[in-house]
Image (cartoon, rainbow, N blue to C red; front, side):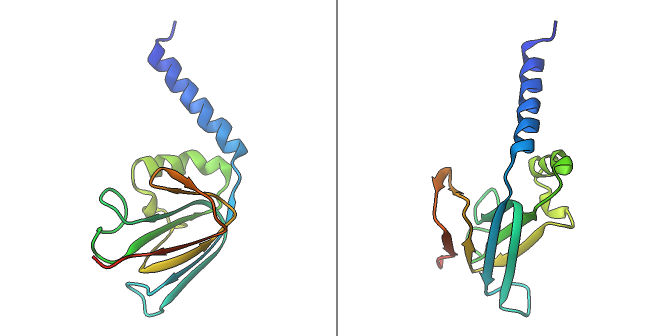
Length: 135
C-alpha cells in the first residue's frame, strides 16, 4: 500500500494536470515605457498569455531600489508543454526559455479582462498602471 506522502504527491500532480486542461488563456495588452537597456522608449505586447508577471522585490524581479520593474511574459503555449514550463517556473529559470519576453521598464500599462494578484490579494480592473516610485 502506498504511503500518505506518495498519495498526496499523486493527488497534487493530478490536480495540476486537471487544471491545465481547463486553463483559460488571458488576452493581455502591455505597453512598457522608458526601457532600460534599449534604444526605444516603448515596448509593446498584445496577445494571449500563459503567464504575465511584473516583479520588483527582494525575491523576484529587479533590485528593489533600481527604479525598474521586471516584466516577464510567457505567451500562450501548447498545454502539452505546460509541465515543462511549470518545472522552469519552480526552478526559477523561466527567463531562460526562448519564447519568454523579459524587459525592464520604469512604468507600464496593462489592459486585460483577467484579475491580477497583487501581493496575494486579488484585484479586478480592466486596466492597470504600474509605476516605480523613486527610492
